[in-house]
Length: 440
Image (cartoon, rainbow, N blue to C red):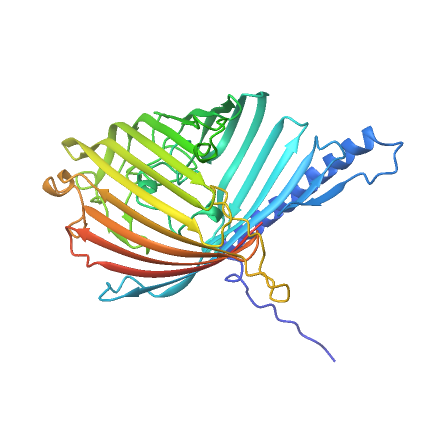
């Protein structure tokens, strides 16, 4: 009797997206093993005569493995945000009611030799592997640190806030004019018992709201930010958490039709309402020359109350064929939040005094938030034919949100946002969005 085996093709099972996911998982495992081995070697060398475990494991909201003296440390965290969106009214066909995985991130943060910190953060949302953060941060002095790699540019107030701690499901319009993540070198630190925080760096340069893994020209962007808490050491408690800041960036970019160096802009429902013209060398609008951004920022927290405001201004030289001109864009937001159950509000979210536990009577913490945001794009985009014909040139959005913090790691949120538009053919957008979040 003979037995015949037939191999079936599985070429579609391991496509490029899945291969990238597997590679990302392998890298994460390798880095975890390396940090654990370094921690074990360090502890063994300093504590051979002791009876303590060579590697210590802790939990501070995330899993931590460290050497006995904490000179070597590995923190494994993550963020999962499962969202649902529904649109009310006469929305365009492109606005779909759907469930999405907004963020699926694994975070590895390691400490080496007590002075160097490394962070690796891939994102698997959408079934694709995107490396969000990958940098090395070295402490040179207590007030001086150097960071190299892919990181958040030191600019936008809300952009620099961790996405797990946002008061709303989506960030406001100013974030779309600020740079996101970029590759470069940054010097940063704190002075005066954290009264002043500063950061300045040189980066490849990215367009508004964008991240980059390379450059489109030889020119670079200089980005800097200063944040001051002038009353942080005051005896007046209600003044301690006042923050005033200013950020700026300057550089030159030369785009091409394939890589124009310009961005489109989206509503809170992630629907594009403005795009520059594209096409061949004579039709496409590209970045061509100097770009200046600046942003005044303010925040305030006192007990269960908090507020923030920021404005972002961009002046960018662009070109379409033989036509060259400057475009100026402006966006701002004002937001307030209040913890209804009395816990303290902060940039780091809310920690419930009584975590959700039905048997113990704990219900977690509840927070209410309200925000007004606007963006105004240069009208020359329409007058000179630089934007696609159906683009809108300004928008005003009013949002209210309710957040339920079940414990330090679990959060549920629901937002209601109304966005109106001028120009183009977009009707007013009514968005209801929900989120279930696990943050470690």
